[in-house]
Picture 1 (tube, rainbow, N blue to C red):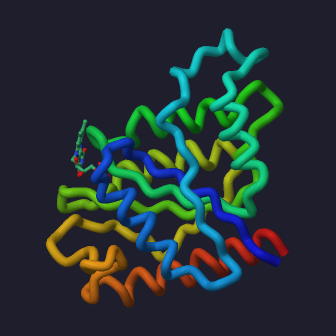
Picture 2 (picture 1 turned 135 degrees about the vertical axis):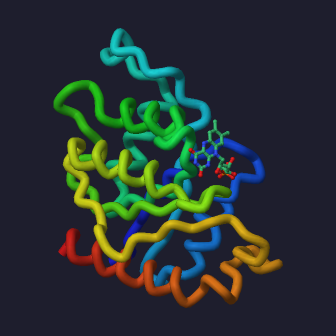
Length: 182
Ligand code: FNR
């Protein structure tokens, strides 16, 4: 099997550290895993009135999620929670009622922040939402990354100081996905 992972990045910023982290993490995955970032920046603001005629960007997101074996959330922390753009995407994918695209997809949660607690509170809020959405989420190891010089290597990979830790995290994530899709 080739495992397809839908990667959801919680920042729309061009030079986002989280987008860089998502790209670098993809290189740590084994050959039978394909990690692809799904766009969420073009989604309209969620409005329940639109549930019966969801926008093309929403339908695309939902089909990308449904086609994936697993999910990887790579998000910054905004004001001690997840960014609104990520919540918007989660809400879109969960509707209309009874058609929750996220349901049952094994997930990992990770993030990088300039602050010392490295997205810990955003991740905890995200776990709360994912529990409700019926998304089995890897509990350990946790990964709270602070953006520092050298986090990324010049070639865009993970820098030497964090490589072993993040490889270990990726190995556990991969095992989690395999376990939930067997
Ligand atoms: C932040 N930032 C931030 N950092 C943090 O550790 N905890 C927080 O609660 C917040 N809150 C916050 C709110 C808003 C609106 C912004 C724009 C930023 C700083 C954040 O870590 C920093 O901007 C990162 O660079 C954002 O991630 P990306 O865009 O680089 O992926």
